[in-house]
Amino acid sequence: MTIQLAPRKTNQGLLTIPQNTFNKVHRLKGDLDRAFIESNTKDKSYAYNLPYIDLYGYPIDVAQMVLITREEVLQYRVGIFAVHDKEIYLATDEINLPIQTPLFDKLKLQGYRLKLFLCSHYSLDKIVTSYDHLKFGQVASDAIVITQETVSTIENQVKDLTNLQEIVTKSNVSDSVQYILTAAVVNKASDIHFEPEKESYNIRLRLDGVLYTYAKLPVSIQKSLDSRLKILSGVKINIDNIPQDGRFSFKYLERDIDVRVSMLPSTYGYSIVMRLLGTGNVELLMADLGFDGINAQRVEAALAKPQGLILTTGPTGSGKTTTLYTFLSQVNNGENKIITLEDPIEYKLPGISQTQIDAAGGFTFASGLRSILRQDPDILMVGEIRDAETADIAVQASLTGHQVLSTIHTNDAAGSIPRMLEMGVKGFILADALEIVIGQRLVRKICPHCQQVEILDEVTAKLVKEQIAKMPKAIKATLPDKVEFYTSPGCEQCNHLGYKGRVGVYEVMSMTSGLKSLMSTKFPSIVEIRDMAMAEGMITMFQDGILKALKGHTDIKELTRNVSSY
Image 1 (cartoon, rainbow, N blue to C red):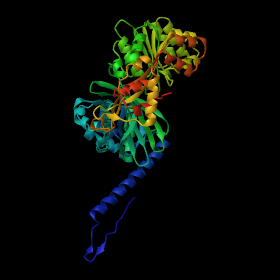
Image 2: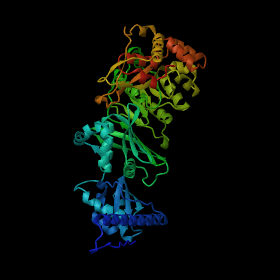
Image 3: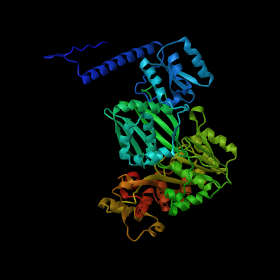
Image 4: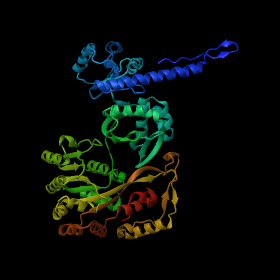
């Protein structure tokens, strides 16, 4: 395409075109030329049944390219733009060049799998120019390592999350991902959300169970971030219309952080959610989680027994797995054989054999539980009881000299018994096997730096008084003389959120004689089980939350947001 501009005439004769106008036209011509070439290349890729790749704006990681020299790229018309898990992604602007075969054979002999993409000469030129940024001695690696030097440089910036948008916008794509991950770890976020909209690309972090938007990026950044996260996660980079799941790990100082990635197609591109799983050692005490008083006493009594089934229950994200890890840490005295079945393994526990479930490969909770019973264990932790077979094996194991810890999805402790009965476990057998069921939720802790007294409205005050009146006599006797609650308006210490950290609220249902009799003689309802448990000394999650609010750990607004008062 050729664009000619006629010069303007003036009284003095001919004048040259203004430089800024010439530059704009030149850029427009270049864009039109590139768009035409890319369209042709895409059509050509269909004809040759090869995937198409446009590396314009693509986050090429220069550390991946050292397996081929710059001279070889120019000679063979093929270059590396990504390497993941021993698979090399190659781009070429020429099809079936005989001279390329020796290069492919060399890479295969080194143990790599090859995936070839068709690209335009513009994309291949980008690979060539990327060698200018390749530092001497670099090796190909997908690993992200966040060093102390990096943390020291950017920790203060990312700790104030209001700066995250500016930092990401001014950085290249590789650095942007590193800064986002650092911000998430520094601020103890559990999830990172990348959400595309028509006019912005939003980054949201889940802090203490609540999502906050910290960056509204221009949509022009979306493609680069999208591609970088695809490569890291090991998913198909040329697919955008089906859900994909992947994972990757990165090192933060001395900690290994595992990241599970879910990609879901939406109107404006992939919605991406990254769940951060800290696989470093966990050293928690029950008091750190929020167990105290009668709840702590009941849990300690159950853990002291050599056998029996201990269940935790609650919705996703309520801290069930962390509770089980804490229990395992407490019973891990070096004298017991402890084996876990998990999906995924969230923390590495020293002295414990931890096993990852592989449902796709046929290694399920049920089949895994049968296998580990042949390993002579004393204590078993099963990530979740979700079917009749797993429930039956877990109950039988708890009756034959094993202590079994697991989770089950119900709304509260009372709901776990009908759920187990629905799975086919007989009531009189469950009554003998079950030791305790722990219902739990996580509530945000109010910031101690801006804590102040809260005056409850009339309806809430009435609800709280009714719940206090229903507490067991032993609990009411320990209530403070002055019933006073607190809240936090927000300050710099808590990023003006009013909350910092979370604490658990619990109901610990022990298998008392009344409950065992109820389970053995009939199929009891949730209401019957709850009433019997409360009559025999159980405090509910809501009541436990009131006790924590009285101590200034949380506020009533946060409690009512997360926990039902029944």
